[in-house]
Length: 178
Picture 1 (cartoon, rainbow, N blue to C red):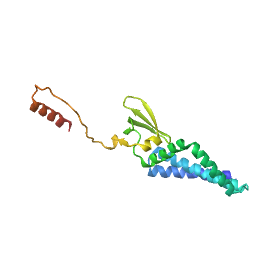
Picture 2 (picture 1 turned 60 degrees about the vertical axis):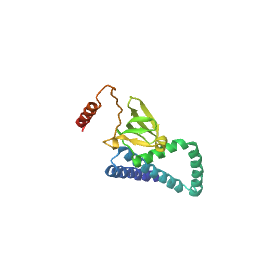
Picture 3 (picture 1 turned 180 degrees about the horizontal axis):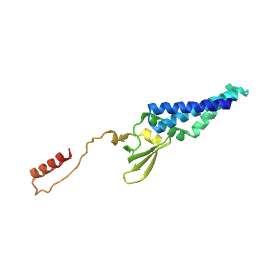
Picture 4 (picture 1 turned 180 degrees about the vertical axis):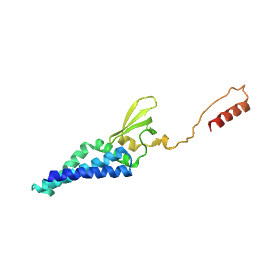
């Protein structure tokens, strides 16, 4: 009976969370994250209630769960760190899919944002998976966020050429770009 109630409440909560995030967020990754977290949260609460109905001591069970979760947390520290960093990145949104970014030593286009890693296609065609913990710890340059950027270009002319004429040709070329 408790399992059926938990299942229906979890399903309803997932639907409510998914529709709410569709209206407010507009990002499919965030929608899936929030709906899955709410669904799982209801199942955890329902499981604790079901075990309490069966007559298990909730205090002892929660103490055991606490010790077990600490041991599991130490064992899965890096994986959990990637997931938590992924949640923070999805919430903060420093970049989106198809944004051109520089993350650490990699520069390219974001193709996928997951809870565990970012997938980027570099400009030379390589596919790079960067763990979210690493993304979270370095500076991110989002080139797509600014439609106009400054570029520097070094050029030279021969010593025998006319500098005034070279300046005029460069100025005319730059005027055509604007």
